[in-house]
Image (cartoon, rainbow, N blue to C red; front, top):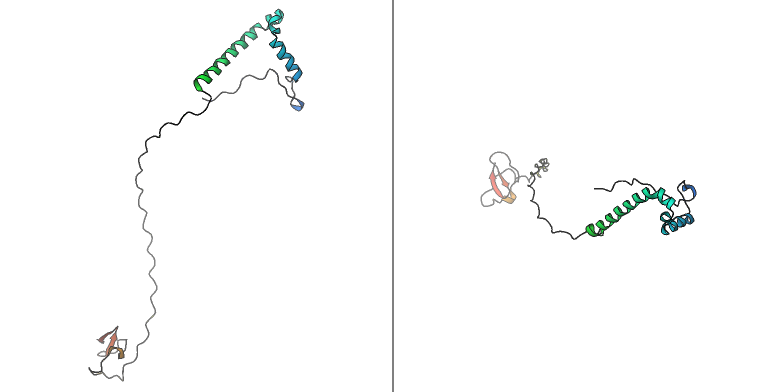
Length: 158
């Protein structure tokens, strides 16, 4: 629980200049008041004591309460330093695996390659004989029906 706001105000202060108000006193007056209190003038003067007795009794009760609070805080709470750290707690469970992401869109098909170069013409439209047949001398494109051509190193008939 947080500390509540202060209810009492200063009996006097030592404000000076623009901050000075009706409760302001100088150092000399403060010394005079302190000396009178320390000398017991408020007790020795029966006229003062008779007038101030109820107030002095209330102040004495407050002083005793404050001293009890000071004793309790010092003895029970300590000096305000943090105590030792306790042991670490158990590690928590691992969470579930998340859902798989969707597949990406399929890319477009690549462009068609350029057409191949025309092959060399056959020799005078005559069919070579078996002894001179070589795939390297045949055209690389299919010709008219019944002609031979070089289909990637294999002799084929159109």
